Image (cartoon, rainbow, N blue to C red; front, side, top):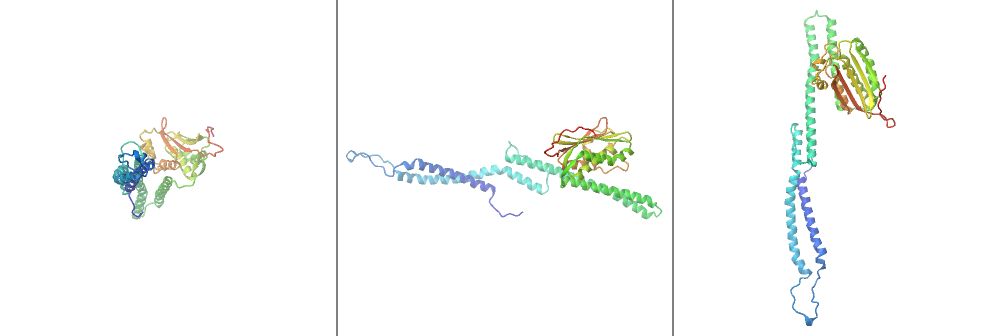
Length: 380
């Protein structure tokens, strides 16, 4: 935004300092007049009778004092003015030096250099608090930009794969007229479905990151039951026990996004499980002012170093890679993290015992004021 030129902050502070010094000097001179000179008589008279009058030494009256005092007072005020301007300019420069560093850092950030940090030394004050807050903002912004760049590169790679496979299949079919058309259509349909699912997942992830959705009262326990009912055939096909327990867990948010979050967690727990005979346990409840959703599953042991990477986009983890129709794009837990973050909650992942994964989602309870959230441990 273009602005008309004006006085700098340093010059304004300098003028303020000089004006204050001049005001203080004027008050001192006024004090001298009010409490001293006004009591000096205009003409000093000899109180003795004329016959006893003797020569007296010179006694100044008010006019004499004013003639002697006024020029020197003007000189003092002029000195105070120059001293205030010079001293104010130096003091303002020293005071605004941190602000100049913050301004330079802001311009560097505007030009795309997010790695620069101010790091003001010294004890805490308003400028150093501003500097620390600006450094923290730059750090988060740099991490966010790096994450977005990495996400864009990974998304391009993931989308390129099904498109490249489809193109290869079409080229083979064009060169080989005897190729089975039904098999070609089936493989093209699978690749197209994978690309559509990936695109929809990317849209959900982007929507969760933006946080632009209407909020309403949602019960996580009902969403957990809906997800379990929907995924029960998949669990039965894999011979995995799926159960839901706990009590109501009311939260405020998007029902659609929260349902996607629960669906992703339960589906991941079913898919990334033992080949047969595993289990998935979903528990919901409200504890104080927090609603909790916990999804536990059996499975292969996970290395502690692998668990934090599971919420990164396209990071599937060596122990969790699937080769069947539910291989996925590695966005399930990334979408969960994005939705939880958009609802100002926390997401905790921990290795299960002896294997599998324990995922805990904590969101702020959204019970009405007349019925506060309470601990709910009833099993259904």
